[in-house]
Image (cartoon, rainbow, N blue to C red; front, side, top):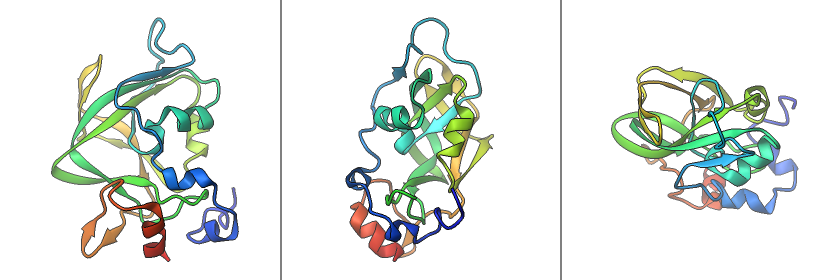
Length: 179
């Protein structure tokens, strides 16, 4: 993908898929497994937070067809899930994380076998970073004190001096704010 394709206004030049307005799609509330990831040992690799589209079985299947993925339900403390200050290449205003000591959020922790590079390629507007101070209570794993996460390169969307909680405004309104 070229820089022009992921630019702030490139979504205007292309027809936006109808499903973009459903972001963050149908996020699972419980743990879920793709392609046998729940049979036998869990996929190896560092834990990766999923809190927007990556917490949706539908989106993960589209991004990682055929990959073994365990998405374990988790509770994240000290971070809030908010909208990012950009429009994705497909026309949705996606999510990011911001540090917020009093916040708690329902997220998923992904364990992905042989799909990390493919998942990275679907996240042109994000950096994958290690959150050393993340406090997570993870279904089946217990307490974790760190995980990788995709964090927006554009920062959080701010309206009237505050962050915009994920799902608190319709996508059409969010795109209008970003112009």
